[in-house]
Structure formats: C-alpha cells, structure tokens
Image 1 (tube, rainbow, N blue to C red):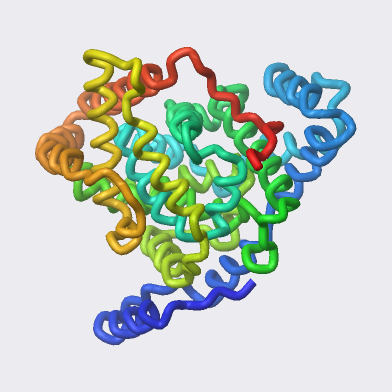
Image 2: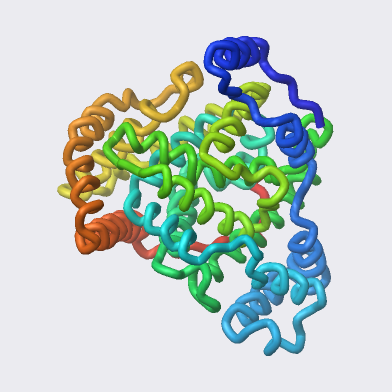
Length: 404
C-alpha cells in the first residue's frame, strides 16, 4: 500500500533537519512497515472468530466458550477448538522483552493521568477521523456514532481502568486480561464484517482496524498524552514516558497488535511515526468524519429528564470534553467540524494546571503522596464512569451486527 507524503510536511521536515539535524520522519524501514501494516490483520484471532463467532458454532456458544476458558483456563475446556487454543497460547505467552517493573511504572503513569488520559486520547482520536480507513469502520459498527458514542467511550474507559490497576495486566485471570482478550476478539469480528461491506474500499484502505491503525492507538495512549498533558501540569519525566511506552507495547501484544516490527523504541521515534501519519493523511472520510466528531462531544450533554446537580455535572463534563478538543485537536482539523466552543473547559484546564504542577512536584518527593495521587485520580475516574454508566453494562460484543 502506497502512502504519499504531503509536500508541506516534506518541506518542513527538510528545513528542520537542515537547521537542527533532527529528522521529523521515521526511517525508511519503519515507514515501509507502517505502509505494509495497513494490509495486515491478526491471523490467529481471525481464524478463531471465523470458526466460532462467524462459523457453524455461532456467536452465543462461542461467547460461552470464551467466558468459560477465561474463567477456568483453556486446558480445562475440552470442547475448545484448536483455533481457540492457538489464540490462548499466543495471548498467554509473555514476550521475552517484557520488563514487569517497567510495565508497572507505566501503569502508574496512567493512574496519575486518570480521566485526563481518556479525554486527551479521545480528542486526538477525533483528529484522525479525517481518514476514511478509520471513519468507515467506526461509522458502520456504530460504536462512536450518534447516541451510542458515549456508551462506547465508557466501554473503552472500562478497559483503560482495568489494565492500569496495579500489576493487573501480568496477573493470570485478572479482569484486565479478560477484557483485553474480548477487545481483541471484538476488533477481529468488526474487521471481518467491515471488510465484506460494500462501503469498504480495500484497494484504498487495506484492512479495517489494521496493524498500523492499532499502532496509532498505542501512541495515543503513550507518547501523545505524555507530551500533551505536560502543558496541563502533568510533569511526566522522560523515564516515565519510556515506561508508559513499554506498558503500551505490552497492551498492544494483548489486543493483537504486532509490536516488534515498527513499534517505537523511544518517545522521539513515536513522535516521528505520528508526524508520518499526519504527513500521509488523505482527508477522504467525507461526511463520516463530521458524523463521528460532531456526535461525540454533544453525547455528554444532559438528557431532557436530567435535573439538578446531575444536570450541572453533565454540563461541566460537556464543556470539559469540548475544552480538550480545543487543546488537542489540530486547529485546522477542528475547524472542519461544528463543535461546542470549548472555551469554558479550556479556561478550567488552564486554571487547574498550577495545582496539578504542585501535586506533581510533591509526589516526586514523597512516595506516599505519589501513591495517594494515583489512588485519588483513579477513584475520581471510576466515580465519573459509574455515574455515567448507570444500570448499563459494558458488552465488548463481538457478535453485534453492523448498523447498515
């Protein structure tokens, strides 16, 4: 698959390299791997889904079998097909490069970021909806379109919260690992359905939810927020940035992303890959980009039956999310969409930054305060999540049909 670098990005890269010696672009090898990654999927999980969820077994029995294997272990499920055993074997293998201490340090960074991680990550994700390869699967699956946008975001938030719990991602049988495997299966199921849909242009876009696009989500949980949230007072050190990069690498392994060929080894490498993505945009999402972007932030607005403090709380989060989009979407992309001004939320975030800086400085002096900062940040995040979720449950449904 060919990717064309925008001439303006190339000229900027040449000027910066000439004056500073710093190259904004990744190496030719990484750029080539990123291009190839647009046509690469997750063969092991795809074989399992094709045989079970989309095969003769059927989605209901496949879901029961998956839940049973997650609960008692794949070796204790005699009816498990070989494709399922292969999936679990890959999922449960700890790669040689994993450093448990570094993963825990990265998870601690996520715990400190808390709610802000999701908000800045989502603003950055909305910035990518200029691309048809990203917008079409989301629009067809309906996850981030219309009234379901907030609930889908709450599902993703549940995964974020589970995987960053202390030592969770390396603990056999943990909720974090369970949800991660279900996310992987869900992505594969959506990929298969979208790939067969007449709206999907395989020649132009390769595979839906490709390896390269999954790689971008890992950067959106590591490099991008580490640098972006620095401006809002979260003083993430270079060592912590490297730790969160390592943590996201392992998360990628869990959800079926190849993290060996092109995964960045440094924060600078991650920024180069993000620059390369921006330089090769096609701006071909058409009306689907506005559908997704303009539906998300308003989904935080209070419903007509919400009154009193709950209404004020919902309005606050609406303005807060709009503020994050104003700060973390590229201005020329944000202007493409009709969004709330974001000014009240931006002012709040800027006004709060000195307090965050103060806590960040003190937590470096006192490990006890650091632990308290992590705990309170996650607790506030969980309270917000539970308040919005209400009586609903996260489904991570691999059997859900496309909406059109």
